[in-house]
Image 1 (cartoon, rainbow, N blue to C red):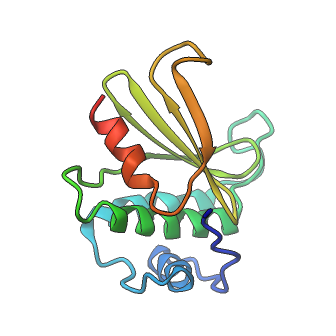
Image 2: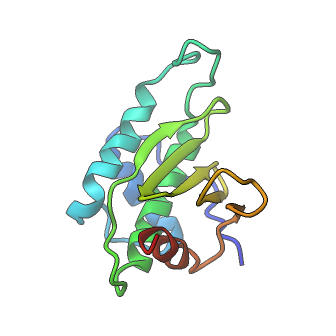
Amino acid sequence: MTFDIGPTQSETTDSGQWIVAASEQTGITRGVTSLKLYSTTAALGALRARNENWDGYGSAKPQNSAISAAMAYCGIFNEELSNSPFAWSMPHVSSNEDGHVTLEWWSLARKLTIYVTATKAKYIKVAGPNITTDMEDGDIETGQFRELWSWLRQG
């Protein structure tokens, strides 16, 4: 089963409100009460300040719907890790040329990147330079983040 969080209804600029609105749609109603997520939420909210061509290479302005979805996903991911030996840590937060949100984590030689659009999240696992044997990608399925996180942290 793939996550389908759909569009959000809130258009407030307060980063806390975004995750509350997005999280309510996914059944997570605790909002920004976790200090573990606060910095990530703030970094995601800051993406709204970017304009078109924010990087000087013609990249699109980050989509508000993708930012809201990323906030909701981060809440879901943190929840999945609640009974894990590996605690949540803040990702590198950015956006790509299409206006989608990127979340990246590194651990030794491994890298986990998640690309978030308004309605889905995709991952790429990188353990080396060979695209055939060292990389894997796909849609993030329900409950899969804990497995991805474990792969990253055990590397």
